[in-house]
Length: 348
Image (tube, rainbow, N blue to C red; front, top):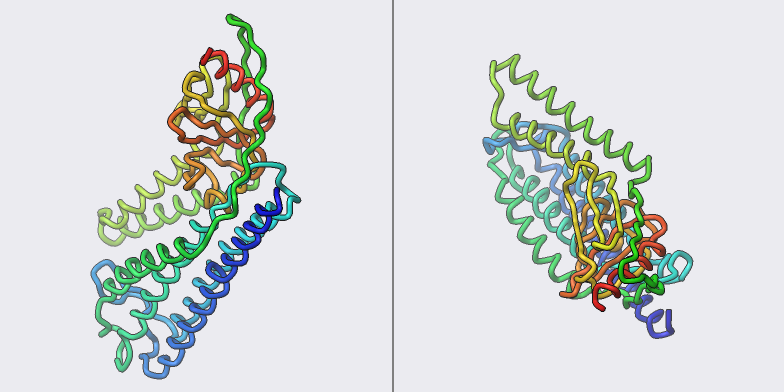
């Protein structure tokens, strides 16, 4: 990293700390205090959840709403910003990066401020809709508050995107292409997978969603004799989550004379990039949260689509049209050298 790049990275981190951490935390705290000041004027118990019909269907202590604002809003901000700063600081100091890690601090700042708008306006609407009521069951619908919060969050997210800057990008390492004769054949293949702890966490999450769907369905059948629309949505969500977990944890990566192929064990999703369509091949280090906002089949502005299953080295291919694709995989140097050799031969 050059001196100017280091200065740019430090400025990006400094700005993100204010835009993505300090100010959002202060806003959540201020909103929680404003809501807390309204607690004496709220019914006890207060409405803390509204059902699909529009009326309140969940009740609790009046201080629950400001507590949710502080804990959920502030906790989410701390989690996202903390992961981003840890990953970004490692890259900026050079302790974990030898080449080419892109940090999308702008995207994470936008996500944080969208959450500020959604929770801040939504929970505040839930509080002020009950001020002066004797019975929380008389509270009007507050769906408008969540809709307004979503819109405000989008506006705040765009503003955060414009104010924040990303660290300067370093080019990845481009290994020397393997020299291949005209009819010479070679194959490189690896399995890319999440860490066992990540797979276990996703499996537990999927099991929890399935359990919720089963309990909801059982209650519906016992009380109504049929499944409600909400239960069908829950079942569909459980099926979707289970499918995504099943196809998103392990991928087969193959480099041969045809180019690069990355596919799930069942054959889908799959990406195939022909050797003749490759402009450049790099080996980069990827920080999933800081660059892509998470793990799995992801998209990041500036980095394109990617199969991001863990932090560490990855193979990044830039197509002839300038679009990039990244896959985190072991022995990426060998894969990049062989793929660059096939691309060079295809161009020749």
